[in-house]
Image (tube, rainbow, N blue to C red; front, top):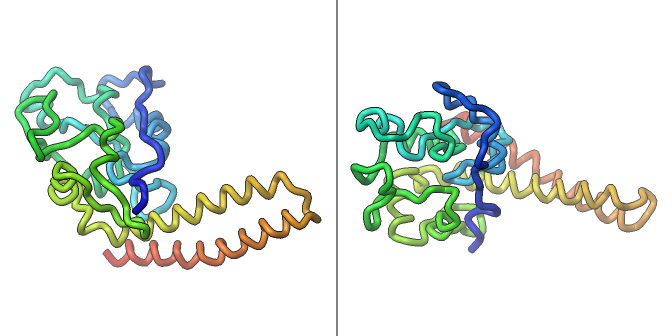
Length: 210
């Protein structure tokens, strides 16, 4: 079993831009606040398998329809999300209130809430699994993680290799090229790099064939 995500996102109190209509103008701030990961599935945004969007946690269609006192550009209601999570979630909402996120075991937890992670876990291969009944509802009814896990696993593995390489590159900088430590680190870099390209190719082929 592995942790669902490495870091909980935190929305800044004062975003850099103050749009009145176009919420997408918040995307750069959200990308940073969400650590370059989807708020819902925690997928890294550095690969061309998908594109990332600005999601309304409380759905915008319901805000407009019910005239709820939330603006469509309200930063505290926005989530940096991959298109798969955003498209699956859509206007799915459990209540008739913008302040009630879930009723019993149906509904959502704001991904910036640390408790969000407690509803899911990962198998050691990166596959997402549900950990609670509320997590089960989000898993099957909102984000369709069960259908998406093949791609999620491929992306998780590639990102795992990327992070390992980044750490090794940083460690290599601290050592003299002629030292044994440098050569040992370089050997490990070569080993992981040999795994990275096939993993990247496999991910790209998977999404091309969807």
